[in-house]
Length: 175
Image 1 (cartoon, helix red, strand yellow):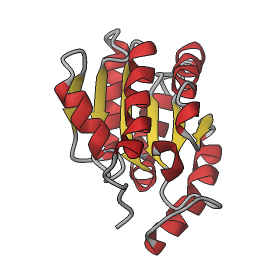
Image 2 (cartoon, helix red, strand yellow):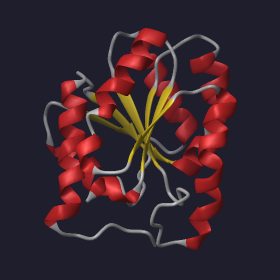
Image 3 (cartoon, one colour):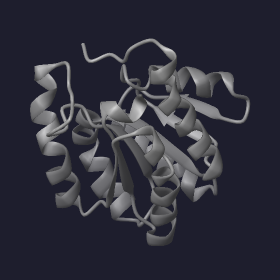
C-alpha cells in the first residue's frame, strides 16, 4: 500500500495543511480517509478549532460541503483521486449546476511523473487531470510542503468563482 513514512518529515506537510486551512478560515473538514490523509485527519480531530465530518462516500462529502457553504460555513473535502471519480454526479449535478464553492483536497495517487508505491493507482493518476478538465474544475497541484499556501489560493478561487476547485497533492507534498 502507498503509505507514508511514519517520521517527523512526513508530518511537515500535514502541519502545513492544517495551517493553510486555518489561514483560509476553513473550520469544517469533510473526509473519506485515504492512507495519505490519516495523519492530517488525526490532527484535525484533536484540534478544537476544526469540525471533523467523516463520510462513507465521496459524493456525500460533496453534498455536505455544498450545504455547509450555503449555510455560510467554509469547508474542505479530503478524498483520494478515485473518490473524485465516484463523486462526479454530485460535483456536476450540485456544485457546478448551482455554482457552489466546494474546495476538494485530493490525494493524487499515481500522478504521472511522481512517486507511487502501488501500481494499481497508476490509471487513476493518469485520469485525474483529464476528469477535472472535462468537468471544468480548476486545479492546483502541490508537489512539496512549501506549496501548501496554494490551498488558500484555491479557496479564494472557489469563493470568487462560485465553483468547485481541486487541490491535487502528490506523495512528495507530505514530506
